[in-house]
Image (cartoon, rainbow, N blue to C red; front, side):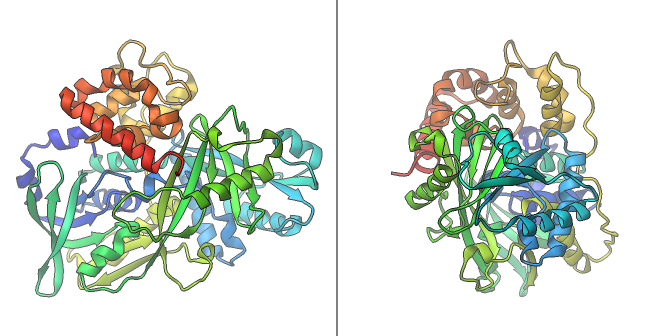
Length: 524
């Protein structure tokens, strides 16, 4: 994942790639990262390659929620909900500062579904699965005090519950960092152009290095396709028919002062009854999500459409009428494509969110599922892999995802230290020590430190400015115009660390701003 993963290797890249690998994992989102970690810590020699940047696809464009799947209860998916609740609680315990509790409030309005009794029954089951008990209902006065800007007409009270939130891209990076500590290797901008075979069985891939255009043949005892929404493309190389239904989820980002929330507010959209939420995240307010078929192809970045923008704005107007929110209040937008198994359901929201593992001509494909359950998905993939890896055995019992983060010494508030330890683990102290004057200050409008930019540029395999501002940090979502007003200081901190000359910086900056305008701004 990090530049020192690449620069610190004791061999050239061709020699590294020519090793005898047990696993070649294609795809650098949360699923691939989780498999790399679980494989590496169990003694397998595992290599992960990603054609773009780590977390470039769905895993940096999710709703940022680590949730137990309350909505799945009404569909009767108790096992999936129980599994999700268990994984959520494990991440809350093991990744404090990266995965944090988030309280949710759902207004009980006259005629709104699901009704109070149904919702409270679901929350009681939720509590039972989590082994805890919380107060879930308040009257209209209390609810209005807790969520002061919500619509009051027809308000009878409200339901309260707790889930969790995260920085999804940083979660991927932290998992990759943990995998590296066990000997795992991850390389970004390394695309699998085709699959290699022994007879009819896949046993490697022809890789293309996006940095210098070189090609490399990599052999492995087993190739795992963890490309998420893109899995059908690689499966096609193995002779398999498409099985996915790509669905797009789009989001709005607003300034916290314009939509101030202490709680996450969950509501049912007035047009179709779908759940929509707004919650505080990383110094801003996040609003989402849509759930529509993505028919634009997967070669370019997804972007919100005018219809989706109107849909989310309508939800805001209905839930927060007195704020009179306008499109001009939106700082940024983003859209991601979910890898959903095509079950033939007409309504996208009813399509299955379960994960699937398929073995086809020696290619093991893992797709679907949720951010929350990445550890479960990884272990299931290895369970399917075990019969194909002669001589390797493991009980595959779940282990803590992260080693405990060491304490740090820094003149920082406890909440900032907690955040850094959660995001950077064993590297938190080194990040702090690398900071220059003023870089332990918070970047206005965010919860990030200037020092995080320097650390990412120095150690985290940044190849383009978008890597730095959309995934290593989230400034491209948190700051209006993608952070253009801060670009001079970002350049002063990062250009020397990246070892880019002026021409490369200027070209990367221009490409980033054009990308931001086309895919992260308001639609035309």
